[in-house]
Length: 281
Length: 359
Image (cartoon, rainbow over all chains, first blue to last red; front, side, top):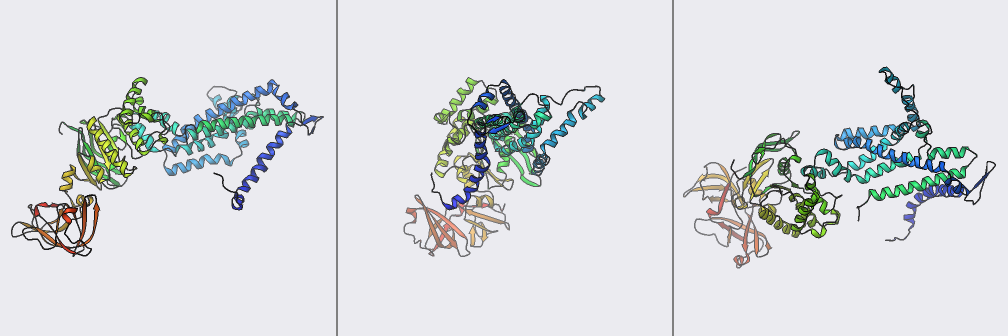
């Protein structure tokens, strides 16, 4: 149904419109324009040349980084979801209302500290002479290389996304109709089986959205793959910094950035479609 | 315990913290009967059903199913399927998958599962909706899915927790006959919790009336309606023709010294005790002059009347302000002046009066 545009309606929708244009549409359009500019002798000049796109898409390094980033972000989304689920399940179903409020508060606390600081403190734990290796040394083990590995990158992604994923999962779990769980129990469905047969299907929308958020955060993250992963394997975020540093290639970095945005849009769209599948028909 | 007993509650108590939901329950459920547990909200009827389903554990006492104590048996190890008030259908499964769920949990093979689900879908006349989502069904259709889902395992007993309360009046009546027929055909014991007298009395073989965690009366609907055991039951069933007073011995038999005057009693009673006399509104009569003979008569004034179908209910008030109801057919009322404020006499035969305890 179309409603006539009134001054009253406009007053309330205008700030959102201005906000979107100013902080999303305009920078995006600028990025698109930038990707067609050319660089000569470290100087950028406005142009309309597809050379940046053909160069970047023609490089094996780019597609390798693209594959790495996709795989890492997908792994982070899956692993974080799996690790977070028992925590959110316990908070949603096994805690009193008071305990639940405290648990939610504790999940918010990590956001008080800068992500970068939290990643640096992981280095203290994971480095060759770090806390974990020293302790393992006492019982005659190690040292193991933990820093500058894919595992360390994964720990970084978990640090980044875990509290948010727990909160998002929790939000869908607390709204599950408890009689559905009782009904499943009543029909010979044991506790663990009920989690898979009833709880997860009921909370599917929230669980998928939580995993999607983790994917988005990990896909664009620069800190963990550099400071915990040691820059190996190369991700798109690392490739962007390398590209801008080498010869002022901002237009080529724009190509990478636009590719990332496009990928996230496709993934987000598919995830939301899957999350709401079979609903509100 | 007799051989046809399926369930027995023996001294069952249930408390939640300091709150006593069920004070002491001792009753039996017979094999193949339709038992209604009835009472106002908070009387402990749902808690009783949930204890039987294994969703709550009794604080004290023993619940037996087929003679075996089931107190420690979790709900997933009992065969006591329940139909919830909200129906608790799984919204993420379609109709067929909902009906197959319990069979799947029992490890019944795919083909067999489908065959048995098909049978019940057909029996409940919902085959055409088999592939639909729950959200696409009407209230009555959901009801049928919930019944099919519980009955597909062919249990010995089915527990129902006010399943019809969300339906409109016409559909409610239709579902009542569906339920009653289903129970008769399958021979499965139905335990039906409700706050509605019409639902309980129209379907059940026996009715349990509960109040504040105790059983007030158990009996067939006729027994309870004709001879309520306590004043609570009489009040709960909506009989308004109640007269309280002290019992004394009169010239012919026992009498009740009530506020409206002296009333004759047909049955023996304890002299000096306070008792309540109740008379069904279908057993009371009206006349313009004081009736002669050994009947009980009370002078009243008309305060209103109500017509439902072929019968009319006349509302009257005694000099003390107590409401009395008389139910008659239209024919029986013709010729009587029934204007508001019209003085009349209400009378009944002492044999139609029934004494209830002061419970």
